[in-house]
Image (cartoon, rainbow, N blue to C red; front, top):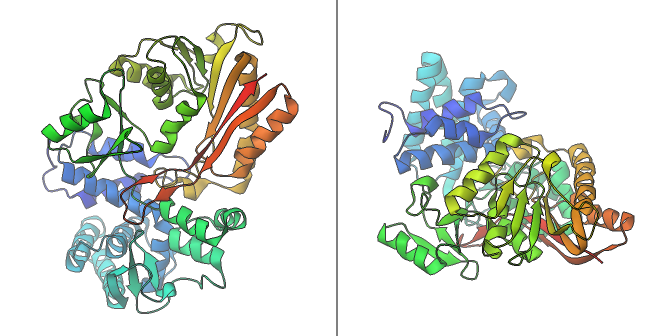
Length: 464
């Protein structure tokens, strides 16, 4: 169906937010289930932007709701609170949407779910907010910083009163409030990277991520795929040193020309580089220990020109099926998907694997823009526990790699305790391994928003 009759994208977003549990659920899966089958690109894009926008900025939004309602969030009914979150998100972060449309639609949503009284409350709170907003799309850096909530890297929503802590006196509190991030996390970044870099990390963690297309080099090239897209009026541009395409507008990936024919995958530039640093060669034997959903596995196969052998395994057998589906769609023949206990051969001997990829489970602090709810769940204690799991995976990889072979250890975290410290502890236990490559990539978004990427870490360890 193109668009549900009588249901707005805001209603779909409200349904997702009402069902979302920040401790357990994946917002992407909830959203996918809610808009599956809807072909209207505008409807899907609007619902997606609202859901992810509210979750990325929820702490800041809730603070504004409390300020303009005079009530703590816990005293507002959950469904009404989510209606207010949608309205406040649109007022502050989507200045292209007229104020009257934002307020009217929020009132309609509230009336449908909570009757006249709820609608009146929503109307009052949002009207209070509009009276206190001086500019919804002020250029970044022009207004008094405590009155300006960053909407993106170029614009802010400016209020007539202070709504944020003083960044000079309390930089940690300022970044926490302005970007809806845990205080302990921004304080960690401030201590390691400094104020300017932390500001960049926070902005990139709250960006609307671009969609990046990686051509399947076994079947096409960047230039050929760009021509196919152009013929179908899909606007894109070549980025990442000519290796990828960036869509200029969000689109349903499965509806793009060439998807069913296996001409491309979708992957962030930082994630795509992980397979590259392992430098797989045609004819080699590779093991991917944490393969699902398969983006890095298929990149390995492409770099190997689909010659050699890759064993892909994962603790989640259900997600391992996604690897097989990806390989089938892309025409990749050298990948064998199997559960870990069935991984064959050569533990600890010279007949082991030439390369082992360990894309370890992590805190996801480098991908907060894509994994919006992580900011509500991640704790310092959880990061410490994850380091133990990551070390166990590296120990496992060491059993399978051949003499002269290499391990690529990667995470989508930017926390030292999950990256450099894990590698250093492993090397201390296993002096036969040496570090050939180690690089931390911080989340990034260009000032003109022409390019962006996630954060992550990758190290290559060679067995002497």
